[in-house]
Length: 261
Image (tube, rainbow, N blue to C red):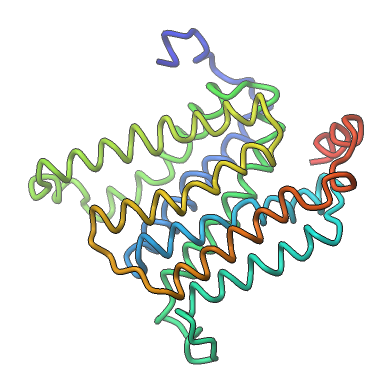
């Protein structure tokens, strides 16, 4: 697809370090965190926690892009974090409920949400220079090269004969749909829209995850999970839309902030 569009041109040497950083954060670290996290938590919990990505994006925007949060957006941050704690602790908020490894999977997914927000901010400058297609193609290549030694060291090919047809279908969906088109569409959207508008579409992910987990995996849904998820989404909504008159910089200030990254 990239070759057909004639965009797959080797990037300039000055962008190699940035692409390596994106491959490390967005592919190597992110995929390891999510893969290991899902081994120790449910898809429902992962979906709710991923709804925190816009909150971390708002924090990074305030720190590195000089964006003002305002009172409502600050309240949204606290509300979203409260909802995340409710999801992680299953409604049993105590020191014991937060102890590892009982909630190790939830914390790994939570860490992946912070990592993804950092990855999006770090890659913004490279995106404007190279375009979404070249940025994603070469950063994913860098991430694949970083993951390859782990695959080789563990003899991952020995597991191939044991993968069922359904398993191969799932791998193709994850590799082509989620990783391939998912990364490409994310940065193609960032190339054309503001970060907050793109991140707002993540509001739908917990709902889709919940529906898919119940329909395909038969996972139970607890009242505290739903309540915590709704609180997370309410917090994210306030972060994105609260104080809209004072929380958005003019174009010149926004451009200056991006140049400072």
